[in-house]
Image 1 (cartoon, rainbow, N blue to C red):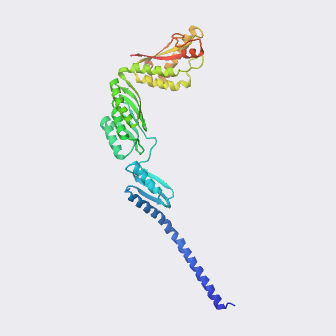
Image 2 (image 1 turned 90 degrees about the horizontal axis):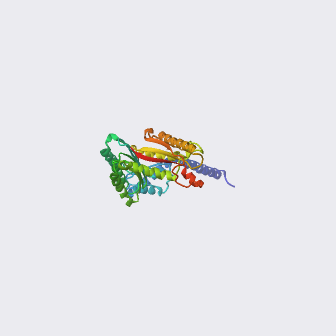
Image 3 (image 1 turned 135 degrees about the vertical axis):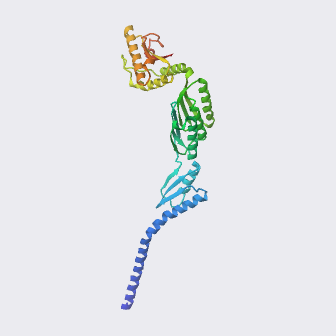
Amino acid sequence: MISNTEHTKKRQHWQITLLGLLLLSLVFVLSIPYFVKRIPQQLEQSIQTRLQQHNIQWAIVEATGRNVTLKGNAPTIEAHDQAFHIAQQTLGVGELTDRMTPRIINPYTMSLAWNGKKLIIKGFIDSKANYNTFLNHAFEQYGKNNVTSKLTIGGGQPAHWKTMVTSVLTELHKLEKGTIEITNQSIYIAGITPSSVTRQTLIKTIKGFEQYQYALESHIVALDETDKICQEKFNTLLQQQHILFSAGNAIVSPKSYPLLDKLADIAALCPKANIIAAGYTDNQGNDEHNIKLSQARAKATVSQLFQRGISLQRMTAIGYGKKNPIATNSTEQGRARNRRIELIVKGN
């Protein structure tokens, strides 16, 4: 039998043990905030040490729990990517947020719009230093008060971007007015220049960047040959598409509005030229009806161009009926080709 003394001793032992466990639990609970606080500190220290080992001094590490945010201005895209990779591979990191600059942009764009008086620049450039250099270059050529910049710092630019956009900026000033749109390595330029010689020089300069895989599309009209260029562009568009009308009347189909927008853009490039809207029909119906219908459709075309900013004083509408067919009237396909509007440039 266990004596009362031994029983008392065992009970005291278990009481002491239980009290110890309770004290240990209390210490653990009380220490949780300390360890919670230490986790982000240790993560920050660990990542910062690894970054410094790779000579990355510009990055700032902030941790909340196991979630980490990287900040700082990377000198290059490569340095940006390297810092992110190092932090990502650090043991214990949960969610990693990238707030480093420059941020990566895709597609990488820049647009320049010059109306002969004011220049508006939008898009991206890779660093503050290059931003200042580019903007100062614009101020020197166009005048500080004539330049509006909406540029943003961002990485991800194609090779030779800085050199290319600086060259484009210089060439744009040779136009009386124009726009340049750059998307990654595609360059689109449109505008008006005083002479065909100037246009050729400009295109040659920009095409030099083809060696760096840049592609150029240009629509530059030289004022010394605007009539010819406008006529060629009118012909090309109207051979590809006809201005469509409702059957038997002169109501322009909304399907032709995009075509009319393009035709108005072309007419604006030869502002001194007079334009004849010539209406034609097939040989179906009587001559008087066809003349009236073709005249009405020519007038409707003039009205549509006027709504798009082309002066009425520059335009004349003439209906020719079934005259001057460009295809046989013996087939429906041929008759459809003969039912058409032509735009004829007459100069000033």
